Every structure is written in C-alpha cells, then in structure tokens.
Image (cartoon, rainbow, N blue to C red; front, side, top):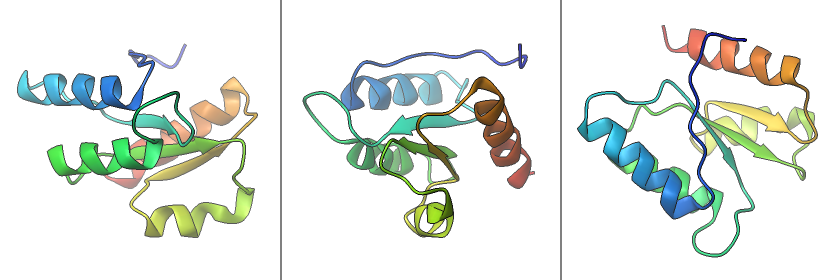
Amino acid sequence: KLGLEADAASSGEEAVELFRKASLEGRGYSAVVMDLALPGGISGLEATLAIKQIDGSAKVIVSSGYLEQNARNAALEHGFAGILPKPYTADRLASELRWVLKSGE
C-alpha cells in the first residue's frame, strides 16, 4: 500500500546478514524497523549497532512494547532514526516510515 518493498528477518543475525548482502549488491534498504527484543542470539540493539557498522547512515526505527511515546529523544541519541512503540497500527507505521525517510533528504 505504501509503495515499498519489505523483507523480514526472524533474528538479529539474519537482519544483519540481509542488510550486509543488500549493501554489497548495491540495493541497500531505505529503512529498517528493528524490534529490541529478538529471539535467541543478538538483541535488536546489537543488530542495530552491527548494521550501523556496515552503513553509518542506516535509518533504523526502534520498535518495542516497552517504549514510551516520549522516548523519541532517547532513541535518537542511541542512533535510531525513529521510534515505533507497540502496539501500532498500519497508519502509525506508515507515518513513522514517511517521517524517517523524509528526515534524511
């Protein structure tokens, strides 16, 4: 509906690998939505740090059920481009994606 393509990863390691592969192939991601709580392996914060090592300008939106709506400043200070507290609607996701994608233009 938004005119965007999406990939999904089931772990932090898989997200980092998808990001690395896309970067190497010259088809990087415009934005990443990263949950902080991921199953097994590395956390969302660790995956974000790894993604930022691949591309320091990567736009990563933090998502979690433990975020307050007013946590945007703290998230931005930690290198996230945006914040998406759970639960969220498709409209809220679309709004945050538009805001993050426009903020870097």
